[in-house]
Image (cartoon, rainbow, N blue to C red; front, side, top):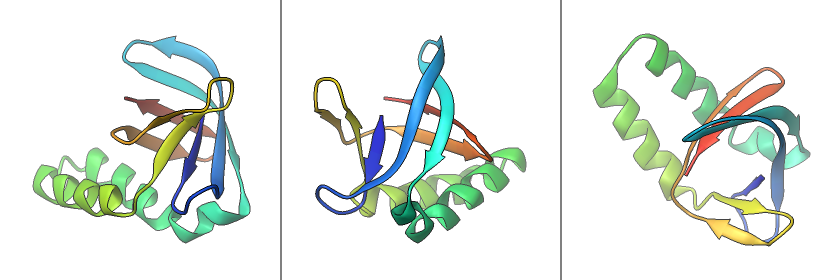
Length: 95
């Protein structure tokens, strides 16, 4: 699955290797465009770890406002509502 902030601009690739419904997990391949949004996902992990739920909800409002989408390459299905966690070379997402 890939995420995009601009139409047809891939930001990352997650090669899914594990599923624990509703979460999918895989190797994270960072593409050049991901640097433009990476700070939001770094903050996501911090707020989640510190259980700062009000700030977490506000952050995800900002992330949704970026217009990011997940796209399944095999079917080109687009997903607008999702949660994504990125840590080093691993990513988890649900939709």
